[in-house]
Image (cartoon, rainbow, N blue to C red; front, side, top):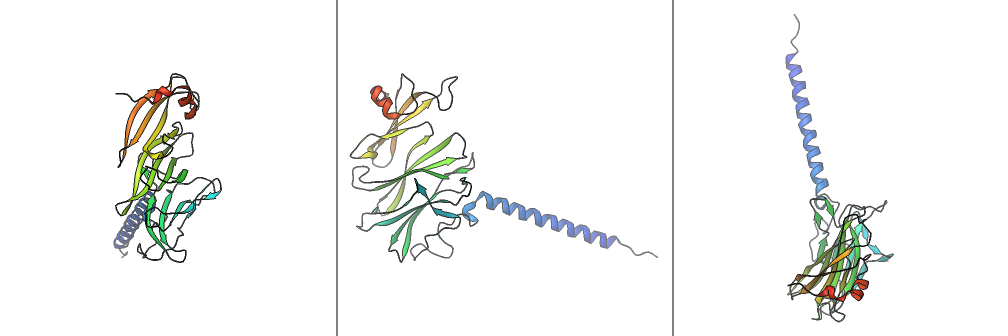
Length: 269
């Protein structure tokens, strides 16, 4: 009489189902980690098991000190008005092929070289629609008396790019007020939006932006007419005002536009 093999076959089927479920869950978790690099160890703002306020390492996994024109973005400046200089460091992803997909990071440390304490961190923002972070640094400046009230300001232009012909730039203005560090949002820019500070003594009181108007048949970096906008500081935030449009077409030199057509700064309404 032959032995029944049905129970053995059933056991094999059950084991296969369990294995499929296990592998499916593992793949699901991996995808979640790739969508959230802050949580999977690629981005480490504060090292694990290390509280803000303790002596901290200044090194970040997968990151290095960013550079502009070969100059490392590591500075000392008194931002909080305590007569002591904070240490500012800006990081970007280590990239062998010059393409970065992790966000830029800026940190503010207090303390001495022997014991530095993290006071503030900024991680480059993400555009969910494009699935892109601010992954490059377009510009970085420390500007004294930015709004005319004596405060020093860090201006960071975070660039969001997929390394094509177009990109978006976000202007961040970091300062200190009422016991905390603030990230003030300036105007949003792109590759065809030159800007200019319109006050030499207090640069941040008024920011001028020119935005290209694409006419039919014009190429990306061709001559364009430009729509001007003025961003005025009200003490807490920027208020956008629409101004004039150039009569002629330009290649993006905002100084040339203002010299030839100063009337474009006239606010509408």
